[in-house]
Amino acid sequence: MQISTRQAGTSTVVDVVGDIDLYNSPEIRKVLLETIRDKRVPRVIINLKDVRYIDSSGVASLVEGLKVSRNMNSRFILYGLSAAAREVLELSRLIKVFEVYENEEQALNAS
Amino acid sequence: MAFSLKLELPSHPQVLSVVRSAVQQFAAVVGFNEDECRSIILAVDEALANIIRHAYGDRYDQTIELTCRRLGPDLGTDPGTPLDQVRDGLEFILIDHGLPADPAQLKGRDLEDVRPGGLGMHLINQIMDQVCYQALPDRNQLRLIKVLNRKPQ
Image 1 (cartoon, helix red, strand yellow):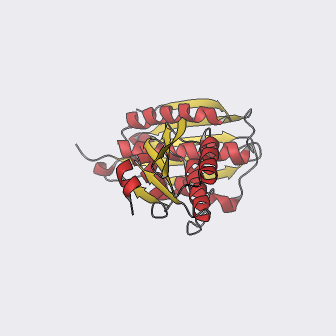
Image 2: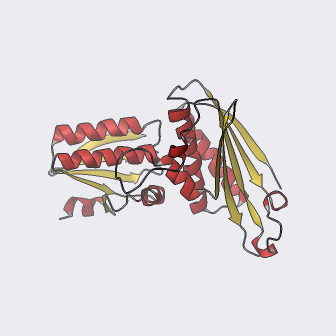
Image 3: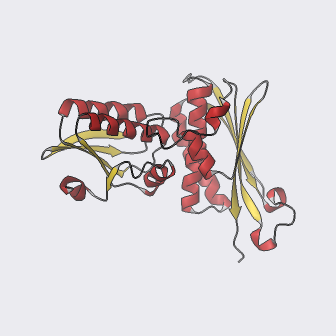
């Protein structure tokens, strides 16, 4: 799994590549929380298009990111969900909790 | 044809990706479609993660035994099942020697409460057709069954 961040205008995009499971979800959590707290941008966008698998510990990291973002008055957006990622969010009834878009352009331009 | 695969695993999260690959191949050979395979992988992965985190308290030097077994029509079919709905399927048995699970956690938590954690058992219960947990004197055993309903040719 690889994780990196980049700026896109006033947004920060977090690119994640690979599977997110119990082995690496602590790293995702750390990067997400540091990004949200340190960058203090109005919009944090998580690019999941190259993530084939997410388990419940990965979902927990995303939920934590969402909660911290709300506390910082920042938007927390997901895009590029694979079938596996969408399934786990639907089964845990969290899909409606997140702001989800198909691609980066939509995520960047969402009003 | 009935067949099985038995894995003795260290309780380390690094082995989870290896197990996911093995389970994917096993489920595909049995005849589950891509969506079903994906769900089965998630359930088995969550069960292993629960053992690592809760039974073994994140101790990574313990042992988990995972047996995957194909339930063929001659093994897993209920008497009286119509021939066009012959049941086939997969059974997973996970054995650990850690702390027994809290019965309340086996049901999964209330999902209306949006917070991190506690989703694993809920996902397993949603995906699998049978989930049976036993805290035995010398081990904990979790048995998961996923039924495959074959359509007539």
